[in-house]
Length: 204
Image 1 (cartoon, rainbow, N blue to C red):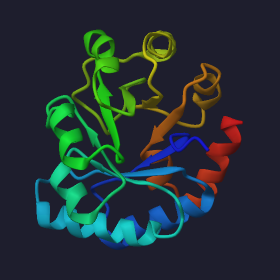
Image 2: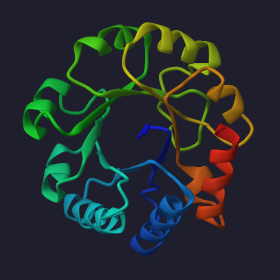
Image 3: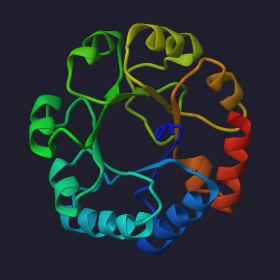
């Protein structure tokens, strides 16, 4: 099974009850991976929220990935970490989490893409494919052509993120991309389970 196929990234603005509800319903609907993202810098709250999501995912086989923070991932024994370009270097993160955890890295420009295969990572998150309100500091928008270029450049699985929704999913999937990461389309849906099922139908 491809764990990257439908990759839920959580919304750090949602309270704990909403967060766990969204994750639970999204997993019922078929998401294949969950990344918990917190941008507030409150490590204790991050650990609490990560542990709550881990409890929801227990027994589902869906991996829990912690965004940015290796310490939080280790604290809750998450399945992996996703790093940004200003986070801990991938080599050090790999040493800390060990060989068996999943390690992802956001790739924001062509130079980073060319270096990715030399790093001890398992997949790349190509950011941002399209403009998106959840990421305002993006270096570039790759678009469909940039995504195809990335797929032809790296041997690593590629997860597309940024501005992905019902209208562009068929076009993205036609590139052979390994996975799509979504925030708003699932987190802000009235029914996250149904929204997830509809997204997966569009991906077939």
